[in-house]
Image 1 (cartoon, rainbow, N blue to C red):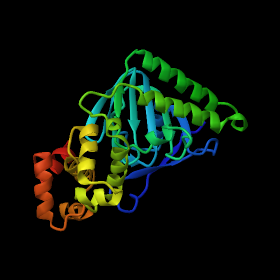
Image 2: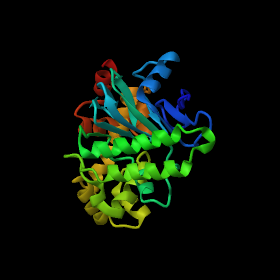
Image 3: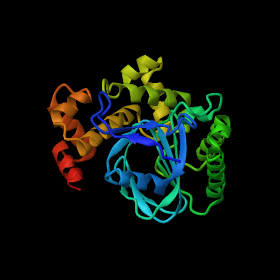
Length: 301
């Protein structure tokens, strides 16, 4: 079995950060693969790729650590990896293996189109803002997920002509729903509390954060009032809608400053700021330092 080919290439249009795409190795199950994490690292070493390469992916990855330890960074947060760690990296998030170490486990890759659309799990794959890491330890939740991952691996490793994509889709849906019922990490808010309004707003924000930061624009596009969006955001994050919008823009600014060499003025225009000085004030207010200082701190590290 050959692992999924993550193609190194030019950034996607409008994206200055390297984006790695998903190609099924032998069309065994289009849009899906399950491998050992150690296999992924070994393949990258054989191809001469740095283990700490900063990149985005255009698919989902779920990793359940079963042995060893290491570190993985997702959007400026470094998570310790140990037995019982569950990582979910969503399309568009910036990640790198800070220290692969000895960590090994099951690494599941799937495109947003793979889960069954008749299942409520389909909703979960469109939520780019969910928790990236959960530490399950030796809990019963870990045992359930480990069993489900094992069932998927057994199905995927069957002779090619006997592998059932439908079984894998249903097992994946079960995994996603099991993850969704886990307690939400403290301090991260509960996006489900915002209901359908919050879900629609976050999807629209992901499409439009680089063109407008006005809450009224999102309310108009979605057919809600600003008060309705604010109530949904307060329920889902504890923050008013304007704070949620600005936080998304600030995150993308941090990604571009830390992981690209684009001039600050170019990043400002990319994020919808006509004047770089306005971008500088905006960024300093949210990050507590100037764009230049932030870049020096993170690129130096």
